[in-house]
Image (cartoon, rainbow, N blue to C red; front, side, top):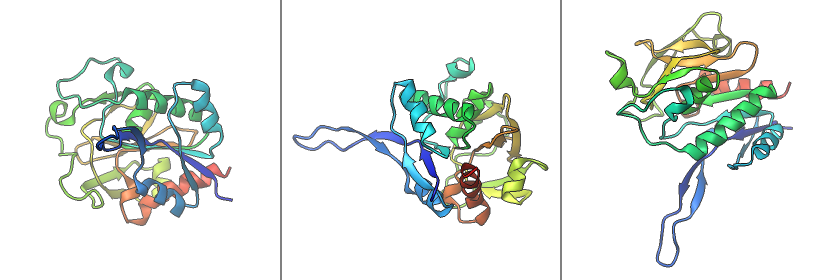
Length: 239
């Protein structure tokens, strides 16, 4: 049987029409589910709840977890910082729920793949900090919000030799897409496993566990090394 892989969705709203008000709805890009299916897993969306026990029970149903990205920022108070002038929009309810899910998964030793903003949340959970805006805080940095199609690479990333990521990708360098303006500054208890040419952190991992964060969106890229991340998650979830 395919192992169940829980995916955290985004939230949005339906379009209002005459006599029909806008209503909240969950949103999930097909690429996440497609990547899990292609890797041999069974994707399910994890609905939000303010009840901490609901997050715990949801995680225990899953063999693995994907913490997804989105067009929002991590609240700076979670890593002891004040708001930067270029801090983007926040989704506190989503972040709070994902934080619970991530914490429960790590405590239960359930494998986690954290994507883009999910990687940033993983770093924060492990005691790290973030650049709230790369362009305003890192002189000479690349433009990490690429203007071309995110299904195409935006820049390269060097993989740290001897890292778990190197074992998974079987590569010393990968071409990645780049759709973020925040980035990991201090990885906390995680270790850095890939960096961009400007030294912005592109991947982190937690030694001794399958807890890997990547700043790019591997589910959107066609090269086989990117699907390998999802395959590794599914393989670990079978253990």
